[in-house]
Image 1 (cartoon, helix red, strand yellow):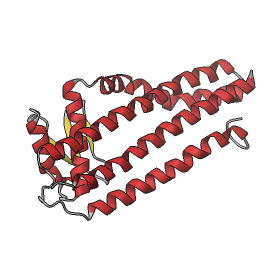
Image 2 (cartoon, rainbow, N blue to C red; image 1 turned 180 degrees about the vertical axis):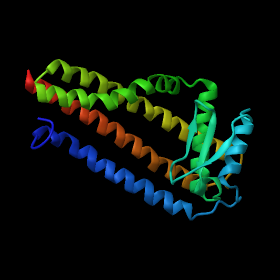
Image 3 (cartoon, rainbow, N blue to C red; image 1 turned 30 degrees about the vertical axis):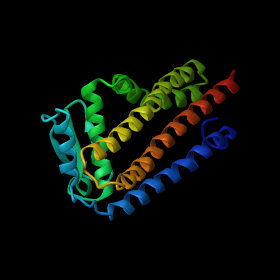
Image 4 (cartoon, helix red, strand yellow; image 1 turned 90 degrees about the vertical axis):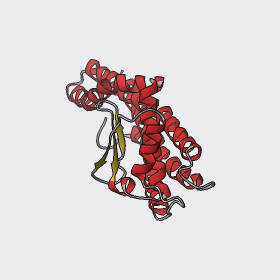
Length: 227
């Protein structure tokens, strides 16, 4: 069964524990280095602008976005959006996050293969993740295992999206640290603080992938028990 007492639920427990740890790690690490000001005093906006301009992306605007840790690059509109604490902040956390989002802009401009694949399957993954459990629940209620199998296929697209996201995010972080050093945006040695923030952020993507893979394995086990 999918709800109620289900021994297959145990498969999710390690991923859930790791997800809680990852969320705690990014919050504590980000808040720690949000209080550590970079020696050169560059704000997140200035760092992002310098990196983008140095790579010929003068046409990519930088906008404020609401919330905390909501920073992102929008490939559809070619806009980089930074939260206020990153946009206006001159901390090592702000530097790392701003540079990371620039990494995504650089990936987009260069046609970085994993990003191209991720963007291509994003619509399918979004629909799949939303529709999968609808079909799975209906399948269990009506005992129609064909629908359950369809739900697994749909959810697999979401799992693939999460798996492809990992190299995309790690590559963006790698580009960020290189840019901070090459363009002298942080003092020597300060990139270590930015790297710790980005490493903590990477854990959240690892956690999301583990959760998705664990859920897929659980669904496959449930499907196998029904045969």
